[in-house]
Length: 406
Image (tube, helix red, strand yellow):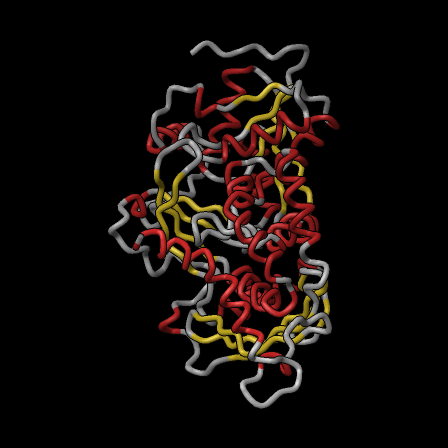
């Protein structure tokens, strides 16, 4: 395919991870666009990743510059916690760990492109996946005139095996091996795995694949109780100890991961139309999701909660599909945040062999009235009032029944 010429500039900023695809892309862009490639590396708290080594690899592969930005606090505070306030889960299980990272990476990548006076940005997402949409919708929302280069939609390679051969010819280290026949994406919130042996939905995930969680069968035989404190829908303390969003989630990841919490294996519907199997680890996020719902149960008005719950699937779709910077997501976020004004208090949980069990919840904003709810003798609720309530609500049902019998 004939490559498009860059207009008025020869710099491309690539969202670089150090993996197979983006490492090959550096060399491919240089060969096909005759340009300078600036590798942008977002530090989102990737587990055990040596970002200095990633930066060095980018430079050794041909990048003229490699820029690392520490986005860990921003990622957790402004993206992960915002999403958790809305209880976003895609198709009932996926906590959107990859999806929520893409808009922040794209935003900072555009900032680097403006700083470096580059007129083009690039990414390593395939033409089959969701990430191409997430990255590019963000690019267009933030910098509508920027040129976007998506190598997977341009080059002649047809598989990752082709990329491995290309990398070997150019002495580019390859992270995908026979011992690790799948790809992964990591940040502080989660790790995702897909491809390779996972493409068969009947084949179980390799036991040695997981990095953030122990096998629940090998988790401690004794449970552990923890507490989480919330203020207006945001976690602010773990076991009574406050800390920044990044530090709190880091601590919770270690505790929950040690008990095997947060693994999920699902086949999901990609935005482009096909089904795809993904295996995810989200230890701290899983606990935060359970705790948040528990606290909402005593602090949120019934009708507000029920209305909000009808919007969760749509809200999650916006994030999964890549519409983080859309007006509809911003509008819905305002609703989600408004619903959290009274979600303040403490939740007690038990962690045990992959399970996160709610043991208690309390709040100064609680709507739970023990005097009202008790089955013992009380002086605040007249049970006779229920008779009229039932008769009024049954009226339309009685009319329908009488009509059918006439």
